[in-house]
Length: 118
Image (tube, rainbow, N blue to C red; front, side):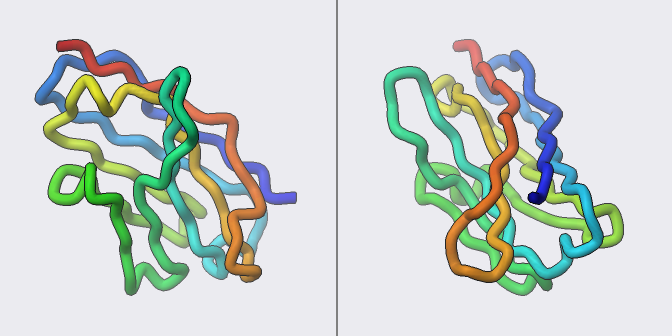
């Protein structure tokens, strides 16, 4: 098990910023590829961003490129999602996930709600 706990969500006006955090328990965090996903009401979960274990490679959904930045601090077992220029369509439950080496996201957090008002 890899417990993941997200925080940092909230209500923000369009154009504003939020920084989400996800902290993992255990000592193996630096070996995990980490991802951020989101799910809006009535919609399927979608990929937002990912970061390799060394932070050498980041990947973003087209809808967030240039606005969101994923980063990690392996010493703190944490991954972050800086979200700028937020839009109402970014409103969703944001979850982090861990790929422990099987090329799939095995473990998921409970999520943190982000609501962007127009």
